[in-house]
Image (cartoon, rainbow, N blue to C red; front, side):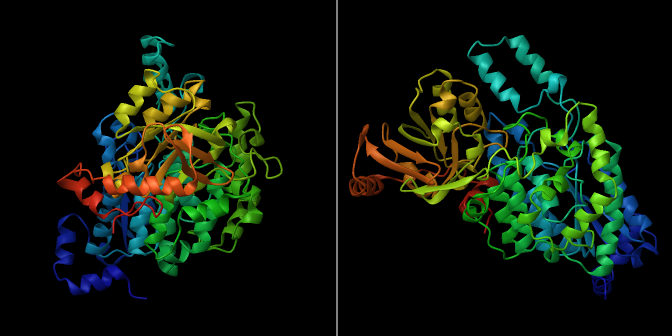
Length: 573
């Protein structure tokens, strides 16, 4: 089989001298050429340490007879971008990184790729990019940061900040928490989007078994990067491409793991976007269907007790898969060159679980304290659902595993806001009362880039009364760290004239999570027949006028003009 690098080399006589000019030897030119793409950069703890894994991967490629080429597309951090318009770039930059991976891979001519990332948008960007390239590919993730004193983790800071604003803790106490919440590099130590997407990459079969969400500071992770560099050469020899691994069945496996871990709702943007690159249709309804009846097993923050580093200590993705094995396609191909079922058999025999369990012993807890058994789950109906109705004809997303039981069925009074800043001010000042439904709209992909409503969700969930008596409804999205009564991705979005744009003060909003319903049932505090509601919405739609686009130049103009619905993945087309 002719190598792509050699085919391109034969077409471009400048290829050899230019590579020699940057230090390649003449012998290097004949070797399989491997793209080693990472998001390394001094951007945040999830990427600042990645170059050590880049070097290990390149060493593995070299020792296996290949030539690695290091490329970099640094990502941004949602946490650092919070609180200002920087967060509006978050989802858009996923697609921009995927674009650069496509450009790097296709403009040069590589035979395979190693993709190294850790965080919210960089891991899904790698999945999208490598799917477009559809060459032999393997993913390495940069692991998870250690927890701080008393197992302090970053997702608690938003709640502590809201408590400080309400005068419940001192400024000094908040400062202490801020200075100790991130003691090392790695993804944030809770089951947010970064941790979820690391797990999704392994669940798809694109990572060496057991390597997702390892502590970023452990030597085992460097060894995994070295082994991945060697393994990509095996994939090149065997001709196993990304599309051979990222099948419909592999995506279904990932969704079943997502249900078991109570994964981030942002996965409903990222998994469909990655599948789309291969012509596979995954949408919110796929998640809803597969989550129904699924067993939820993982006791990791923000919904559970433990920091995310304990996930690896308890056996990681393989341990979860062992528990839900009856729900998985075990015959799918993986980057080991073997099937998922064969990988699980090998791990059970080679001492992997004993090695992981040794870490748990130091904390005096058992594996089942972190990953429950299939027979003893935390829940038995998955963790996310898709709600529909006259308020969300195309759907909306709720992580019902994080919703208080009191809010599973409710009729609430609408309090609409056209930006997050106004909404959070109303929550903090207690203008929002029990029984209210806080709306934040014009924050979808076409409205403002679809930022997270993180601070508002934290302000609500940290308030003992409001956290059990109000809902937050938005066409924006939530942080993977969010918990509480939050419904996002409402589609069509307000900027497209969706019904969420038509909601008025004191409309009555019915939420029924078991029946998957989100609808307007009344006006000015009075319930009305369905046909009357439809007539009123039609009148409001005729009077509605589109808002002037928030962005008239640059990346966010491009993104807002080309992004599809959140229920399809929010990708650009």
